[in-house]
Length: 185
Image 1 (tube, rainbow, N blue to C red):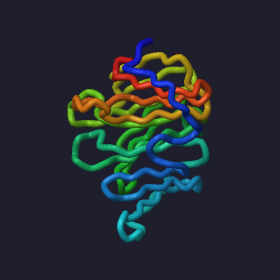
Image 2: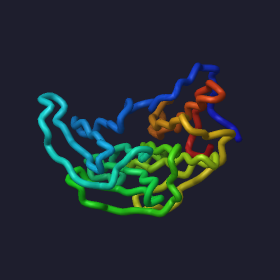
Image 3: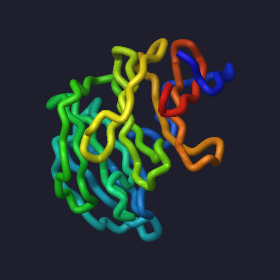
């Protein structure tokens, strides 16, 4: 396994980008998964509710938002531990796809354009120490093994070096390090 760099940075149990409580920000809207099985969308400036829909979202599920189909609008990606699937929803709750990935409590999700094709890929890190990368149709783009992905670890995706392709950031709580990978691991 190789990485782009591994600085000795103190990592704490936290979601790297989206804060706690299942909240993401996409298209100037705040999206909250409420553990009561709903996603709520709020307008960023006013705080007004602009939508909600039922998904089965509950404790230990994960969510993120990004444009996976290239239409210029973010989709909501949900990892559901009770069904073992990853789902893709539009902002109005229309299900665009689902895939059985054995999603478990402690797994994490992120998304971003790893290939530079203008569409975000879905990144799933599992407790078996694998990072899986899927396109919007759940075709496997790549997968690679990491040293350790345990409960409390987090992943995030972003273009850190400005090359037009996002990198994967892994915060390893037990080792207290942050590791950055390209899409090939």
